[in-house]
Length: 138
Image (cartoon, rainbow, N blue to C red; front, side, top):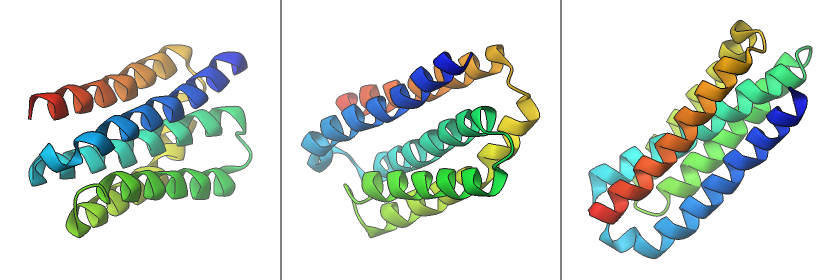
């Protein structure tokens, strides 16, 4: 189980990095509303994945994991939001913060269920895939 968690953890960051590079090239073609949704998906999805994975790997470090997942969500939301404008940056910041605070709670409630972790990864990867497809169609 722990090997899968490490694979999921690094895969989330790799997908976010690839998405950022792709969106950076297309940022002038993406509208304001789609930009806000992109910032929310990036900040929220990355912090949710990070918080749930880390709380399942280190269950006794709740405070540190909450701070790490919140900072991860804030950073991702700000980076993706900064591609568009300041209002989008603020939306990504707040969404990443809130999801980062809630993610360890969700992970603790899941009790290390592999089925839940696979569902979560499908959700995060699917969200980033929808972001890339919708940015291409805009």
